[in-house]
Length: 467
Image (tube, rainbow, N blue to C red; front, side, top):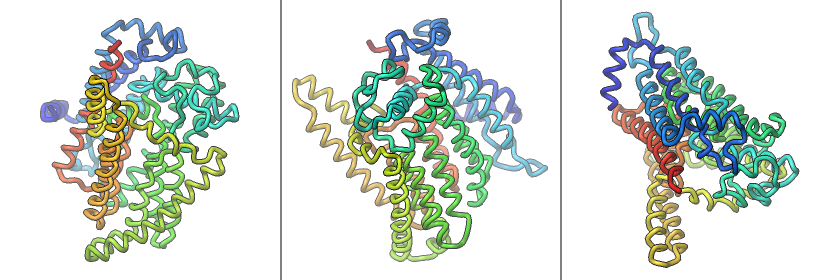
């Protein structure tokens, strides 16, 4: 398939306008299909008569077809818009950074005012923001526990449960719904405002990091920011992972700013601690903060000395990051109640291998009239142990390349954990965009990215079609 798209790209002669138009058509179809009331959890569809009317203008099952076709068009346009691997006669690349950013803006435009696409998590964010604004703690009250305008639209799967989101994510939600005047539909779509700020930060910092590391900033931008998972799940789905990615990348950039030890062991990890307060997965980045300033020394040392050097530096950096995270949590007044809800991460079925294993076993045990709780606990333990072994191997294998350790390690966390949502993957892709990957590594990772985006679209529409 990629070979066919490459052939089409060559026939277009590097002209970006048709490709940008194809991507706009793709996101327009995704947005239109997502307006259908079947994707809402409220008693009367989306809390907007206009949105419901627009959605119903594309009746079942054509709204589902539109979403899948739209994702296919977006993925094809993105692949064909990739910058050339060689420079032109004037030293530039085609397409350049300006064209890529215009493409991102235009592809995002049809998604800005439609309901959240391929996931209703933005509704949960709005409800969490309402709870905080009522002076209550979402970790204790639980979703829908404070009533309010967003509660009727929360997915019943999560109603009554707390969340594992850390405090800065909840405070951001509270600020957004307050700015939106607690409007029901407006508060939900306004959850994209922090995402757009995050994407602006990523667009600024990612090419700079790439240049600092001796790589092509335009290709890093194309792969790490413009990819379909970012457009669909950061912009379209308004997921708070975008803020974590932006702040964590800033932390890496800060760590590389100077030769003094404080940049990598204090300043960078402090920013990583703030990123963790948006999403805890940023914590692994302390390895890169600690290791990048001494990357040349790590590469020249023997394995035992290399592991020791990276180990003690990472321990110091982790201490700073955790202390920052703890300070933010305490200052927020929300505390550490998110720890009680970590087990809910595997409640929604995903394509993670251990999740599929758990679901299959649960179905068989329940069909036989048994209790699957022991099986689910065993699979959870196996997932955790497998992940720890793989992470240990990654850290030793890439002890001389700390950024690679974080990139591949973060991907392992997403794949081998009990839930693998598509909005988890852009963090790993942004990091991999800062590595000199082999052609095979780039090919397999890109194929996974595109296949996962398409599979998620198909899985979403199929799941909603089941009574």
